[in-house]
Amino acid sequence: MIDLHDKLVLALGERDGIPAQALAACAESAGGRVVYAATQCFV
Amino acid sequence: MTTERAAPPPIIRPAVRAARFAIAHVPGLIPAGSKPRRELAARGAAERAALLARLRSFEDAVRYPPHQVMLGTLTPEALRGIPRPWHDRPVDGARPEGPGGRIVDEMDFYAWLARADTASLIYLTPEFARTLQAFGAPERIQTMTAPDLARAVERGADPLRRAPDETIGAVVPAHEQDESLAAPVLLENLAAKVTGGLALRTLLEAVDSDTPVDYLIGCGEEAVGDRYQRGGGNLAKAMGEVAGVRTAGASDVKSFCAGPLHALLVAGALIAAGVYRRVVVVAGGSLAKLGMKYRGHLSAGYPVLEDVIVGAAIDVVPDDGRSPILRLDAAAVHRVGDGAAPHQMAQVLSVAPLRAAGLRLSDVDRYAVELHNPDITEPAGSGDVPYRNYQMIAALAAQAGEIEGSAMDRFIEAHGMPGFSPTQGHIASAVAYLPHAIAGLTDGRLRRVQLVAKGSLFLGRMTNMADGASLLLERNEALPAEGRPA
Image 1: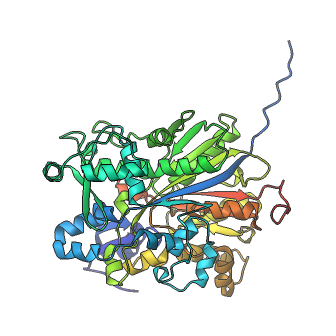
Image 2: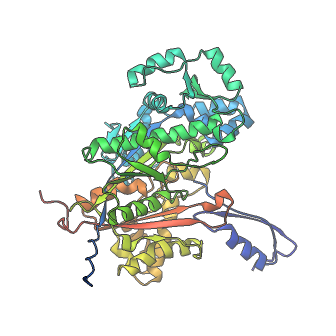
Image 3: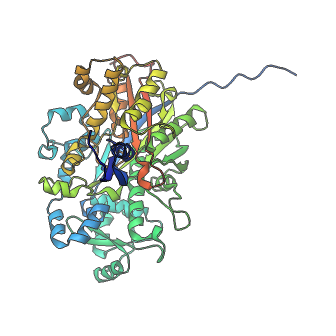
């Protein structure tokens, strides 16, 4: 598993893909610090 | 005194009788779309020239295969046999109307815009106003000379343009200090009013014009109001006015791109309860989304494909012995406590309501999902949106043991379709398929169609949630199994 300790994370989700909250939860579980999380719709 | 209660009234089954689209081809207004407006301001004249060099003619827009699918003269499945990009494969003999609606050019759009301007906010050049008379514009149009127009634009008016770059008028602000009544906002709302009203008129000209409409439900993505009630709404009533519908009351139902399915659910419930006998769901198009992905299109050497604003009108009536039944018992909405990951959405919107009705995923002939045209989305990096939605439904069918994992592609081929809708948000979200669904469920061989739509509530920053809704349309059992008798 990727180690994100000491890393800052920008979590950019997509409406028909992975929501930002899910990305952020994964990043935090890997030790990262999420500094920005937003889900976007690109259509 | 009697203890007997009156028998409950019979339940009326709602049916979706017809749907029509009004597609306004307005390449001259692309610079007024949100993305081009910002990019052209930042990048200057060279960027503007590059965009204007890649506009489509009206003839090209009419002959564009996905637009002919919207108009109902080509089936979505027929696109599988047409190599992409589809703008390189114009349809010979294409006409600007069909069983799914009509496409109008800039002149028709501006004539309707002038007609819809009840607040006297639009000024046209004297020359253009005269030209517009031949297109049904009202006799009295406010005019302004070109130098006066330029001064008005300096004071906050928003220019109106014909392709490629001819300024033919302007919308003026309705209040000097009210951002909700700024000229660009008013132009967006007027464009929605015109396209929704035109779709309504197209529907009523073609379908049962003698039966009055009782109620209109608006479900577009505009926000109409002033500074004290931004988004106050009821554009549906204004659409009814411009379409000449005098019998109807109206209100709006909002949920981003999922709005039309929520509105259809409400319309079906009003019919089932016997409150109304004819409800029309209406939606205007989104001017803000014009040219949203133009930079991707320019990079790919494509024309700017987001050059249309699309309105819709959907007729909901009691069971007439022919039209597809709207199964209220198999409708679903995404609830506050439901998860928003794609598989959770598909479970809530597609699997759960079918299971509750005793159906399998493969009992649905076609899934109408987010039907965005991939030729529009892929050059901008957004991928093939409908295909991703179909992959998820197929995966859930495999997980449920209905199909083998290796059969997912066949499931998608059999129960899905290529995307074809202009990227007009709420229009692309399932309802773009309605004319084909109704034809297939009456004259064709379809038995069931599930409409599935999602809404990006999180974009408004009031919640991190998404939204969604689904509806099941079923062949009317009064019809024979495979189309009407000859």
